[in-house]
Amino acid sequence: MAVHIKLVRNNIKSSSSYGKYFAKAVSQGEVTLKDLAADACRNSSLSHGAVIHVVTELEDMLKQRLSEGQTVRIEGIGSFSLRVESIGVDDPKSFNLRYHIKRIICGFLPAGHRRRDHRISYNFCEDVKTVWQIGAKP
Image (cartoon, rainbow, N blue to C red; front, side, top):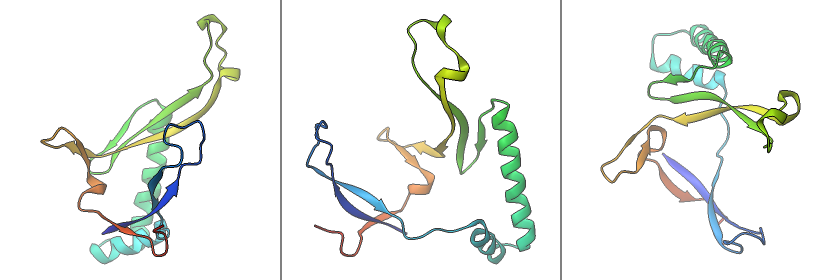
C-alpha cells in the first residue's frame, strides 16, 4: 500500500510558511459502493445484493442516530458525529439559530490507538508508505 504525493508551494503571502513546499496526497482514483461490494463478495460468502443492502441500511442508521445527536462509533473504522459551524456573537441573548448557524457538517475521527511514544496511530494509515507521484517532484 502506498500514498502518492506531490509537492505544493504555499502561496499564501500572510502565512509564516509562505514559499515553502509541502507534501500533498494525490488521489489514485475513486471506488464506489459497487466496487466495495464486489470486493466483499470475493472475500466472503455474501451476495452482491446483500452487501449493498447492509451498507445502504448502515447509511440510514447513521443518518437517524446522528440526527438524534448521538455519536456513532464503528469499531475498526471510527466515529461519526455532527458538528455545527456558527458565527460568533458578543451576547448569548442575541444568538439566533436562523442567522448564526452557518451549516451542520458530519465529522469523522478514524479509529486508532496511542503508541508508546504517545502519538496516535490510525488504523487506516498503518503500514502505508509514500511514493512520489510521477512527474510531480520539483
